Amino acid sequence: MFIGEYKYNLDTKNRLAMPSKFRNLFKDGAVITKGLDNCLFVYTTKEWKKLADKLANLPFSQAKSRAFSRMMLAGAMDVKIDKLGRVILPDYLKQFASLNKKVVLAGLYNRLEVWDEKMWNKYQRTSEKDSNEIAEGLVDLGI
Image (tube, rainbow, N blue to C red; front, top):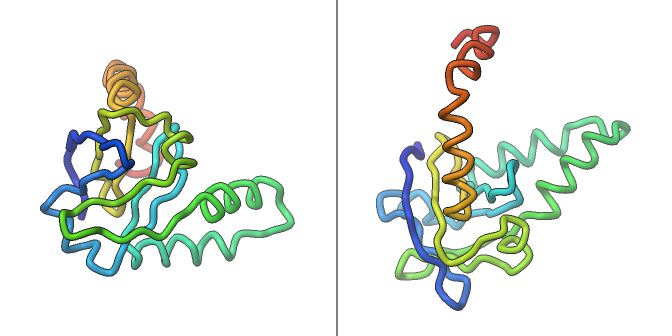
């Protein structure tokens, strides 16, 4: 399970360190893809397979299903973690998420999200300000 918030720096070769406590979960590799809210999603290969299976079963006759599948699947990249616990982010993913040197990795149960630190801070300020309204909207989900 991924939880917590971790701050790292991208190096000049687009290498990003994974939090040490999660590295063993990526022993078989990882998949990084375009996420929502202008961040990247990082999945273990096992979790990625679950998501990819769901995406493959969306009705391809619906434009929104095709668009979402294309974003997630065509935007994905298999990556390996090196001996120092780093992955190399492809340029197209770095550009998609507007990543600069300082990034934040946020644990969200079955995935990590990779955010540019400034964008993360802005997102956090907005969501924390609206937290009561957000919580009230979740009542229909049983939370």
